[in-house]
Image (cartoon, rainbow, N blue to C red):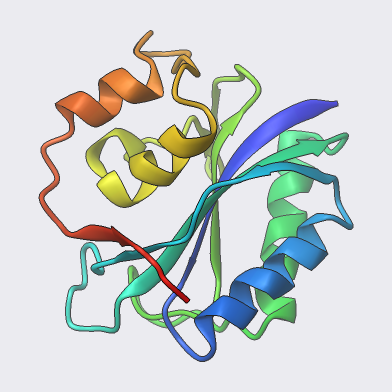
Length: 160
């Protein structure tokens, strides 16, 4: 079993329901060990769209990284995701931020997530569940990455 740290994002439809659906489906491919609070975050990249709900998840799973990615894509489709434009609005997006201390770089999968250190919407919820986790490439903890992150987009706690 490995622990995968995931980031859930949703900005279409009933965002709270989308996250709950993701939790249920993730528990079919592993065991959720920790959930961060939900944060409302401004869209990154393509900014003219609704705010996102973001949440970090620690998932214990027996799936290998490639199989986990396939299962995650299936969960996104089951919840109604359709691909539009890059960084566009979506019902559900699940990113693999870490998978144990693995370093993977293939055409379809890069772990650790290559841009998480630039994004407060990923680091803040991740900090809630694993502040001392060490990035296997940079050697920095999540706390250290958050402290040095230059992203200024708003991230605020959801109160739903």
